[in-house]
Image (cartoon, rainbow, N blue to C red; front, top):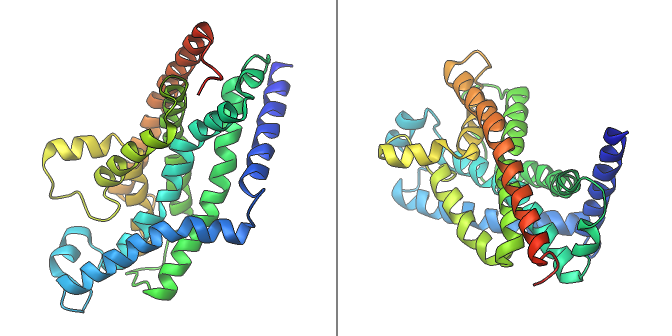
Length: 283
């Protein structure tokens, strides 16, 4: 019985999230809006790459470091992951903030429904559009700059890497959503956390030659492993049997196992504190 109610809660929250996202804008307009920011990042990287390589776009040092010949293909896949960061990490807090601002947060959180299931539905609704945005941005990158893979892309591996990354990132989303009960500054906090994740995840550059302390921080972020697996799958044609791929997949699974329970516990504690203090709906 409880499972049936949880499924109904998830589905209602999921559909509600989809409707809220496209309520005031068409799907085409939403995709265009979501790809505009990473597209300008890619264009900036293109200008820098052209300047640094004398217009060839090819760097022997970069190729030796990553095994990938084309820097723009590397960057395009990296910045395409922006959509997953925003949806999985900030989608839950954005949903809670919206309920607070509309004065409906207390009505939602006093119901007997499972709140984690409700939050998960909101996050998954955002992730649907993130997947569309991700592949649309890859298409734009291919049309504008072209792709230069060394082998046929391994699509199944790329899909597995993306899915595991999204699930692992949800742990961060639970914690960030709980913080939103206390801080009431979802937008400001996301503007601080997002650049940190982009910097340390190596979306625009390889982290291979950075100091050990930098690598340790990077390895703790699921995006680091997800984007590397996806790059290797799409640009190098790597397979599941590749030791580096197996290591990255193993880390993502381990992060899921460790981070999701921690994120769930922290979120529940912060929700209970907000209920006791009567700050669920205040903003």
